[in-house]
Length: 177
Image 1 (tube, rainbow, N blue to C red):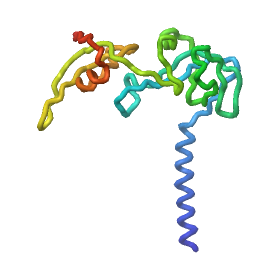
Image 2 (tube, rainbow, N blue to C red; image 1 turned 60 degrees about the vertical axis):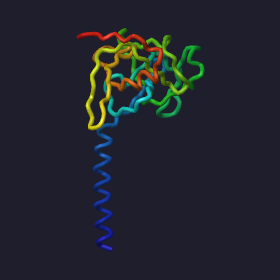
Image 3 (spheres, rainbow, N blue to C red; image 1 turned 90 degrees about the horizontal axis):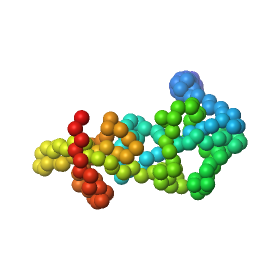
Image 4 (cartoon, rainbow, N blue to C red; image 1 turned 30 degrees about the vertical axis):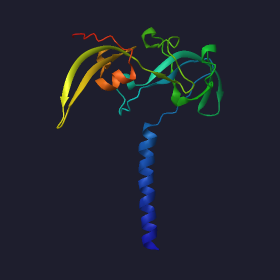
């Protein structure tokens, strides 16, 4: 019984330590009715990437006004008629407080946003080409600049995949830095 009590005590100590670390990073987000909020949308491309950089960093559209609070962590927003297919209640993780700066606003009018708040990226220009040598074959790579993103957010993609996914993409303009 002593050993079981000792094991339980150590498990409780480990759980308390984990809870302390988690609570330290957690922040309670509280918003007021009438505040303006950005709404998070996610770009979708055929390639799965890990990390939170470049064009895969969170994007927000808006601002939209908070109509009312629904529960502890959800808010109802006033959405335009164009987004009528999207449910208007969002968790606080999908919202960001609006700080007036025109450069942060992503115009949602030209985005084709689906009902799950995602949109598809499209290539804009090819910035660079290179051939990656593997053991048995050579892989042709191109550095693609995406629409609505700058040159610093360009990514290396396989040339065959880009031509297969975007067959009408004929702007093979190599831009020098």
